[in-house]
Length: 295
Image (cartoon, rainbow, N blue to C red):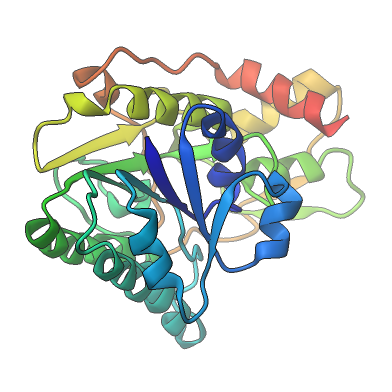
């Protein structure tokens, strides 16, 4: 399959591209060519976001787009508005425009569990401005779907951890607090989150691509998680037990945000509605992998 991927140098992309490269014809739409070559050598075709990128996208004529690119922030102040709109709405709209007159069959979009503040998968309710920008993009996606004729698969990942990432995530913050001299200030840590290992996420996308012909509807949505909730405090306890260290955290040192997601757990394995797939890595096993990679 000819697959165009945005956000290839991000967290999921860095892990997904090598897994897909051996069996598919990949095109990576990137801002920084040197970073892309650093991660994947020069064996994957790249389209650089310059003045000619739209023509290059048309020429690549992808059958599938995996849209991972996103500007992620928990902030909602005036300083981030332009970046959020440009990355999460404007860029995606230009991409869809560039895909006109191609043979695109499937557009795999990436949402966020923060679009569902009440944990109701049938009723989006963005918790943060970032989540609102992801929800807003859906209307534009629906418009271009009607024009171009592709099918949309909207993937909603939950709390991904493991692997390598340039941005510190919740797991990293807790890990860095182990036996630390300086106390880490955190919220009370009682949110129930669905932690899914990045290796399971990659495995899901590989199955999704292999079984993509089963998606017959114009729009399908899959919430991607394990269905098991764990709190940050529980994660800290697992890290302590597995390392013999103590997390130096002041739980409650930071108040919850006004619209924090307090219960974000996949209700059912929606992937199984379309093809046979189950996450394989338990939280404890995933943390062991995470710790091994820290060595």
